Length: 291
Image 1: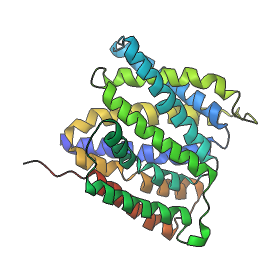
Image 2: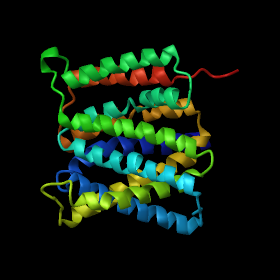
Image 3: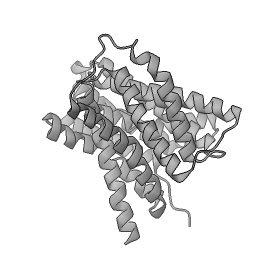
């Protein structure tokens, strides 16, 4: 019963995170990317501070660790969030979700370079399969239609910064608890983002509709706050390999939400490419059970 309940909550998290691509696409229509980044981080930080005050979980860190957290906040939070919204101005949310789905492969490459972890032949094969899938998605199935959207370049940067964030969090978590890492890095990301909110965007766009602000606040708290806490709380009850399979369903959630909220039809090349990408990621991250 406990495992069934855990799977239900984990599925909810995947639905939320997959929907975030469509939510982001809707929000950049009424808020400019840098301003949206700052506002989202503001409400995420307020939520985390509230949780910290309630649980009395805030801990001090050393100067060396704070320097690492500062770097994490700039790269893994601010640039990651800003490039995501910058890219969604022109990039298709489904294509963005599929590109970000390859983050585990890039994380494996970075881990092999910086952490000296093994990069098995299985991961290389999975990378090739995923690249074939990206080709189908980006070209829409035809060589003549190879046109790289500028927004997709920003989405690739989002994926790379996410992989860097995973590597840095893995290193820092050996000394600092995950909640402290999340809180400090988001505070740094917020502080760094403030001056850019008024300088990067021309023209500056900000909605004055209450419904848009309610949508921004609720998605920020649910996507980056509540869903993350639920995932971390329930992941211990299931196998890591099965949980990773669930997380790979995010692109399909983005497809369905794109149809429901943006009235965007699903192309055959997108569906075929998504199967290649998810298959490649599964092949790369698959681990045999130890007897």
